[in-house]
Image 1 (tube, helix red, strand yellow):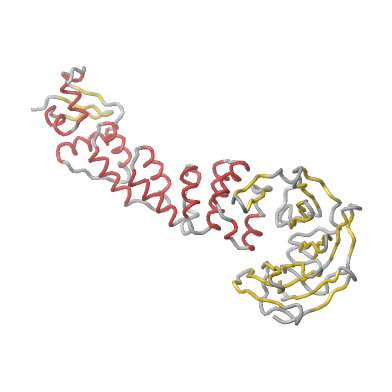
Image 2 (cartoon, rainbow, N blue to C red; image 1 turned 90 degrees about the horizontal axis):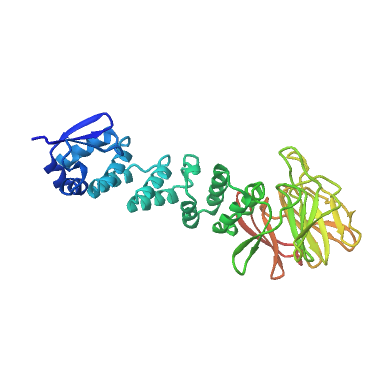
Length: 399
């Protein structure tokens, strides 16, 4: 015989106290203790919606429930309030099966709200494993910082991690300090030089930072005076030099700044005589040279300038004899070697006599590759779409 009605919103559901008390700890405590509802003909539960209330009552009588995407959260709220752990577990199992790119973040947040351990683990695993495949579909704005850190620490691609971090900071309205703090969890040393140039250095959020290889930690430095990207930099005689770069899609800069590493003070230096980005910078016998670069997407520069710190001025040197667009440079035995690029260049500059020489070309372009001296040889590594490594012997002019 019906002896109580449960009221959920505008719905009144007839029930039996003995059934409710026997299947639900919440109602057991209500009806077997001296609460006001013990003898009431109607019990109003404002916290549970009419749809969820009806489903819960059906579940208490039949121990079955039809869980859908639309009613899952309501059932979670009801089962949490009514201490229905078994129903809560059924909903959790259902939601684990619903995880996909567009829902994983919202499900993760829901799981944290209701302390659903299995759903938390499954959502984090999906997010970590599929970050690159579902990057554009994931709701970054809703992702909590602690969950972002988990993904950054566990996803395989550091390139994808950087892009995810950048997107998250932008979506959540974060600032540079927050970006730099979270950047600790991205290992940029595992990213290609091309990616660093075109995706890291071109982002406004990344102002200026120092990486300590000993402690493997980033240290935030004072921001540069003029915002730019695709600029060039070099450490020379206790100073970090920043030269040229783009200030917009159509405008290049001639600005030159130096940071005193001891005092951490920036100083504006005389501008470069040309406006360029992606220029080459090399230090040879305490002399600093800036070579080439791009004036626009259609034209490259062959100019060479030497900076005099004592006179705080630039001196024009002999121009580069060949195309060096997207090439790389290094110093070797007091000479400057410019290698690679679209024209597969290999040229040597002799600062003492201010003249250039043409050398045997490498087999690959190595555009935006890395050139360095190692064991008396010059090594060129990788480049745009290139994973090859070539070795050059200056003594024999052979690759």
